[in-house]
Length: 302
Ligand code: PEP
Ligand code: MG
Image (cartoon, rainbow, N blue to C red; front, side, top):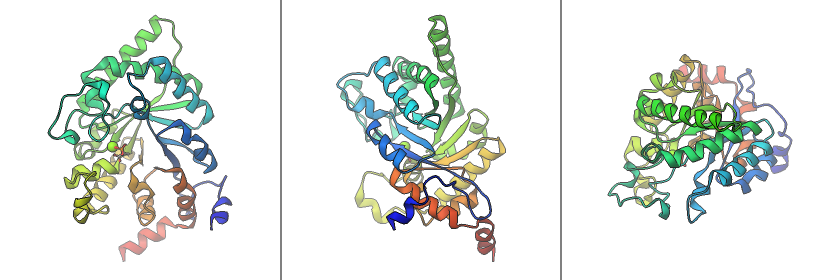
C-alpha cells in the first residue's frame, strides 16, 4: 500500500472532474523539513513558529529567527511557506514571558493578544519574517483573531516595521498575509475579515474547542466532543464561501483537514488547501484523485 502511494508523488491534486486543491504540510520544527519534501508537499501550510521560543531560555533574537525562516524558505525553493506568528499561551507556556497566572488560559492572553499587548516581541518576529521573505515565498499568518480591529492593529505595526527596515536600509520582501480562523467570532465575521487579508486558514482544533466549549486538552470530555459537529462544519463552509466572495482562498490547517472521511465534503465546500502532517499528504492525494465532486454533490441532493 505504501508503495502504491509512492507512485502518487509528482502528481497534481486534482479530482476526476478537474477541481484542484493544494496539499501542504504542517511542521513544528525545521527538523521536519526532510519528511515534508519526501511526502511531496506543495508547500508548508502551517509552520508553528512557537517552537523557536519554547526551545529557548530567553527571547530568540531577530537574527536567530531570520536564519531559521530563511532556511525554511530556501529549502522549500519557491513553494509557499506559511509561517504562523507566535502562538504562546494556553497550552504552550514559556517562563521568560512572565505571564500572569490566569484562571482560564485558553480564554486568556495568548497568541495575537500577547503580540498586540507587547509589540516589541511581535516586531522582532515581523522584522525577521520580512527579511527572510527575500529568500523564498514566505506568507505570514496571524493566530487567534477575533476582530477586524485586531487585523487593522496588526497592519499598523507591520507598516511601522517596514518603515523602520526601509530607513535602516535593510532589505525585505513582500509576503502574503493571512489569518487563522479558529474562533467562532472570526468565522461569523469572515465576510468582513476576508476584505482585509490575502488568505484564511481554518484552525479546526481551536475552532472546535471554542465552538463546543470543550477543553481540547481534557480527555475526560471526549464523550462530549464531536469532531464532525454540524456547527463546526457549517462554519467551515461559511468561511470558504465568504473567502471566495472576497476573492481570497481558504484552507484548513487543523487536525480535521486530515480526516479522510471528510475529504469529499471539504472538496464539495470548495476548500482550496488542506495542510496536514506530512504523512497524510499522499493518502489524501489518493482520495482527491479518485473523487468526482460533481457526482458527490448530486448524490447528496437525492
Ligand atoms: C488549530 O487550532 O487548529 C491549529 C492549527 O493551531 P494549534 O493546534 O497550534 O492551536
Ligand atoms: Mg490554534
